[in-house]
Amino acid sequence: MKSINFAIIGFGSIAKAHALAAYDANLRYNLPFTLNLKYVVTRKPCEIKLPGVKNCINVQEVLEDESIDFISISTPNDSHLEYVEKAVQYYKAIYCEKPLASTYEDALKMTEAVNKNNVKNAVAFMYRFLPAVRLLKREIANKTIGDIIDFKIKIYHKSYLNSNKKGTWRTLKSSGGGALLDLGAHLIDLIFFTLGEIEKIDSKTRIYFKERSFVDEIAYCDIKLFNGVQGSIEVSRIFAEADQRDSFEIYGTKGSMKLNFKNPYVLEIFLNEENMVKLVKPDIAEDMQFYPDERNVLGYFQSAHTASIINFANSIYENKDIGIAASFEDGLKCQKIIKEAYENPLK
Image (cartoon, rainbow, N blue to C red; front, side, top):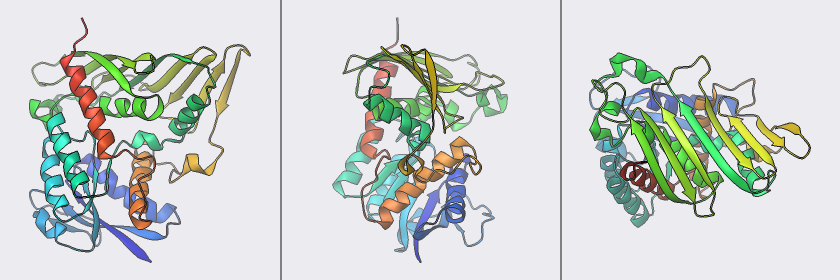
């Protein structure tokens, strides 16, 4: 059986999610290939307790290995450009963590580099692979709730309430942005993926723990699409609740649709004229492609990462396009909108 060999650059929490995806993929899915993690690249030597996985501190060694099919870039945002520029010299396919870069200018250089060298690429906007998101996209196209009046998307995290986060790269200005860039990038991509192109965005950002963060911890954005639809996104790294609210709500002329990212198998549809709530679940194989059933899910976050990485590996194996995954072009669009959001504060 053919192996799709890859290397991960970086070994933080997201890199570990990418590593776990390979083992999950091989155990759970009847793939026509094995997804084989061959290297983990770190700046300093470290012990990688995974059989058959080699730790390297020189990315050049990895890129010169002809058996490597793609690299996964899982390093701080401001280093993405460096690794992309090196990888395209060897025509290695590139799977890059979001956001594409710390700045729009770097994201543009990265996109131009992969396009010029015809290098297969994708960005880890893995929310696209949640079954409920795919259901939502289809129901929007079917006009199930009529014309859209408004939408609201929220992601609340609480991890940066921890004072030990002070001084991490995500709290520094070199990261290129805070909650809006880090979490909001996912939501901007979801808008592009499900609702359409963004015409205008205005933002209000806030730092509460000014002694330990130099970038926004909270962000709210008003958004207008080219089709006239208006809505909002809200993200926070410091909102703590017993049940964290990660949700997507759409209101239309015939009702509403809601999904909770933590329950990725159900789309709630309210039909106003019938005064009826429908709980819609995936009913076609495409909705569940590379995503496990409810008994086998490892949490929506990890399972979405697994689905996204399998999809990219499969596109390499079958020598086809990346399907519903986000490309560098998609990542660049998100980066441009986020840049505009930071430059257009709400009054």
